[in-house]
Image (cartoon, rainbow, N blue to C red):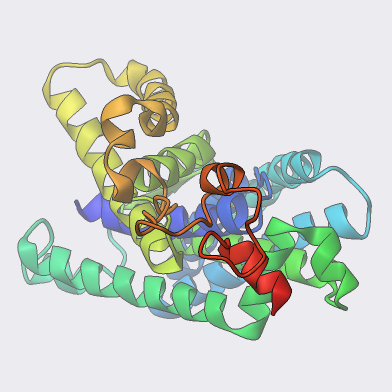
Length: 328
């Protein structure tokens, strides 16, 4: 549960790009390691772990901005732009760490107070992480309801339409990618401090984990609105970690974890198509309300309009609502 709550920050970042902006960003695999490498290097250098974590967020913001710059100003396809940034970050991360692996076992981290008080691995640490994750969630929810957040949502839904209204979609794209990778880098910094080391390969395949969390959560909890969609991403992250934990406890080989994650994504994508979820409006319908049942005698139903008498619309008792509206 602790890991699931920490990885929820990454799930929120993936939610911003893949669901809100509708942008397939693969920078995540690189920016996650960038966050861990930046935080670990600064902590070893004697920097306060909280300041080191903030610096990691800044590094993630820059990584996401570069991807957005390549896509919007360079005209490079979004998928390719993310891949190029991810590949470039591999060398940058090695430069930041100066080695392929950095140990934090003897360093003070943001989790040191929890370890010293024997709270790590208890319900106390889970409660603290829940509070931290909810703060991130409410900040994301609030931002997406501002004018700028609504413009970002519109950019993901209909780029041409919102551009015709005077919104600079290049700026909204770059901003969203920066914020998303800032959250991912935050997650990387926390994971490095939680597990006690930063490794150059710690972000490989992470985008699949993020997608599994977001898709699994929204397949179960739906995405009727921003509040439910972001909550689904968080709970999906926790559920994903619990499933992985149960799979390992059942004796599954650790070498099969990537395959297990891929299968989870496939199942999550197929869940809304399965019959038993379709019968639950709040889950299978993905938030689309069922058609309202019209009261007897109302002829707004197309079938009723076709069945209306020939004299309909002349003010007689058989007049349809649509005809009455035209007469008015």
